[in-house]
Image (cartoon, rainbow over all chains, first blue to last red; front, side, top):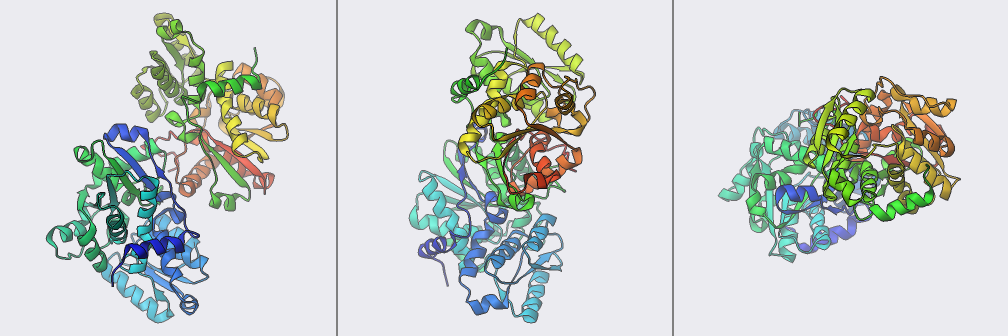
Length: 314
Length: 314
């Protein structure tokens, strides 16, 4: 079971009536600051405020009417849950979302606002999986995985197809990595079309299972992640690991302090909201400017669902 | 001494190489929330993050090389100072900016970053004017007023010409009013071109000199303003008062609580930063939805220079 460029291209055809083609934006003052030419793929302006809308909608296009009638279920620290809730509403299905107790309040609220049933659990992968299993057994809903599934990977990879069209002259693309669905999809699509473009995953230092897996070739699981980037605390998926190992050029890490600094400078200069997980690409450029100097660097701003009531930058 | 539509049209020709034609943006979830069709003129994405870039650049296009060589000076609670600093740098002039001690830190920092000399003063109109007078006498710099001047009014009014092009079907336009330069320029331009469109000023309740002046026909000065909308604490200009009296349809007020609520909902839904002064238009719609129900309402988002270190919404 793998994912091909054709799968990503087909996914884009399937989802483009449901999700936004987000802009690839530039901000001169951030170019001046970084010494690179930065192109921000603004998935913070995607439906439900995050790239997760792509995979969730794509997964639901693949379900039968019978499956949709049973409902859909997932576990999510936030954006996938909200995206699945939104997509389920669009497809007329009931959504059940298992959320850890430390999920940001706005993401929980969005998931509820889109009409999903939220099921609370402890903030561990084991608790999430157990609660999900119980939910599926009780309701008969179809499990739509948050990241480790071909339909999700193909859906998330669609943003790379748009980026290559929006600027064919990119030298590198920086992609946040948590569960790895986006990095897997972007890597395989970019490398199939444009092997000359470097695809680099960016991960918080406090949840660096993808980097350790990538470097050692052994799939490491993430236990007790410690980072403000709530969307990147999840462990790397198995299918994603294989795709990332084969198609990604590098994975780098950034500290929470670097994430916070990048978040503030981006919000002030770009006048746009970004969540901690969404800004790790800019943090990576600011942490190692000589690596990207004068290059055209695509940065995926993966989401903008920041908790304004609890500003992590203070 | 007055200002005509022709002046505004000429101003747009003069400044369009220096400032952005900002987008007129829609956000479906805010339409759903308000029951109106809202069109946001995103001056938070203007150069230096505020509409003030228009007037400042326009004023400087009208100075002689000899005047520019003497430098320019102003007093400002923030955005006009930063805008003048930016424009002065573009025109090769030194800028001196008198700022009250309660000006938001990011605005002071931006003014300094653009190369201006900042002169601190007490947060009263009298102190500002006295410090400015001393500065001009000492340096010989040319005073560029923050709002009560034909070149400034014509410059700010240019955003209305863009709005009418970007959506010719607006029923009303909501404009923040502090010193009144923007409301004066927008009102006279809109009423000359499209008298059917309602132009409504929006002011914080704690600095409602424009509303009181408008209602009574007597120019009231604002003493001891009390509002989080730092850009709207200034007193209505004399020339602006005359233009607003003649061309504006109405002025409404909003409370700080309404401003804060509107700011949060806009940031969460639009994923864009807005400063308190910039969101009063949306606050007015949310405060009186029946007045705007089903209408196409233009809302000027006048600036996005919010102080992230001191979130006023908490």
